[in-house]
Length: 80
Image (tube, rainbow, N blue to C red):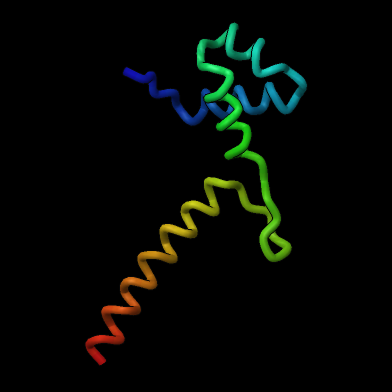
């Protein structure tokens, strides 16, 4: 059974890592695995998309929204 951590907790660890703390020290002090913390850091790291800064979480949300809109568009084009 895996432990669910709050977004605030994840954000706090990401901030500590960005301030110079190692993944190992954060894992030892707070409990989540180094791999989990590394994933959270990666998800919070902004990427540039068409000159705009987006996080991986933002990109995933946009991809999900795009899939919904494409499906709606397909349905509407069949009706018309």
